[in-house]
Amino acid sequence: MGVFKVVAIILLLIPILGICTFIYQAYSIARSISVVNSEINFLQMNIDWSYIPYPPYIMPIIRYVILTISLTIRNPTDFSIEIESIHYKVYIEGIYVGKGSKGKFVIMPGSQKISFSLSISTDELSNVLKKLINSAIKNGFRNIKIHYKIEGTIDIPIKLFNTIKLPIKVAVPFDLHGTYTYVLKIPKTYRFGS
Image (tube, rainbow, N blue to C red; front, side):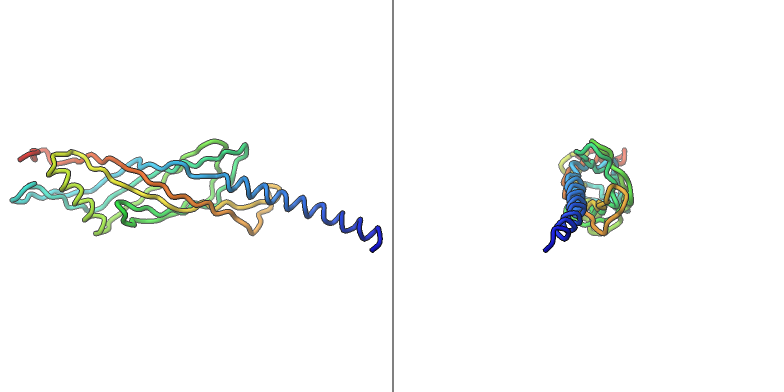
């Protein structure tokens, strides 16, 4: 092999190695993004109350639930990161209640919250919430603890020199749990301990 061939191969390998290094750095930066917290900001239950002739003398009929949840996304880098999409599934008391996604947005360095809402009307969830409410009323409590879980992925595209989108993306998974205290709005005519 001649000297010219060796020099040509080296000159060809240098940009390829440079591009591979940049892709690896972009991949590492994308992998550093994480969802660090979740919380229910708002939970509204549309409840019709009916009176019954035995304790606790009142029973909820849950028509639907509206839920607003926020996720805190952490970007530990010094760069803004484009998020292609975030996909999520929501569970309440172990019951799958819905899913959704949010399209393109940018996460600045530090932490940033994003919010989404769901309107839920499943019989299975209504029955579980009804049991929680009935138990609370029987025990004289004016609130219930609702356990929730949010899982999903954040899809981050890899861009060459922050401009050319490559057919590579990083999927960062998340799985968060929490508890929300819901204050019951019981009819004023009902007296606890009746």
